[in-house]
Image 1 (cartoon, one colour):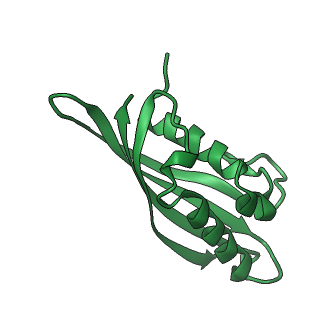
Image 2: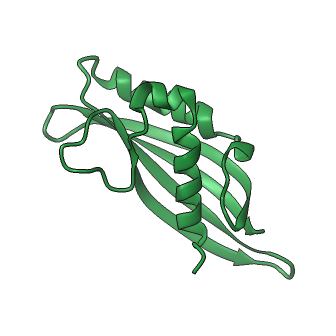
Length: 138
């Protein structure tokens, strides 16, 4: 069975992020759906994925809102989390050609916003990055 919009997009984004030198300089290839026990910091984790389907007379597609979480426990505080945000922005915002979404055409990829908060345990920071993608069936 082929992947739907959301999973195909997640796979394409992960591949683009681990292929980007700016991102891997900060998190290596630590881009997870669910991080393993004892994970090494910093890392990126996929958060919420919300596809909204649409169709026209000629196309079927979806707008997909997707979030990434940049997790940091650096002595530099929120600085490392913000640097990861900036690297993700550079790697993905309007970079549709760098993201392969198998079975779909990625029409548009927008970095919408981010926020950085201290983790509840006070040991690190998490930046939540909001992206929006527009996909159509290939």
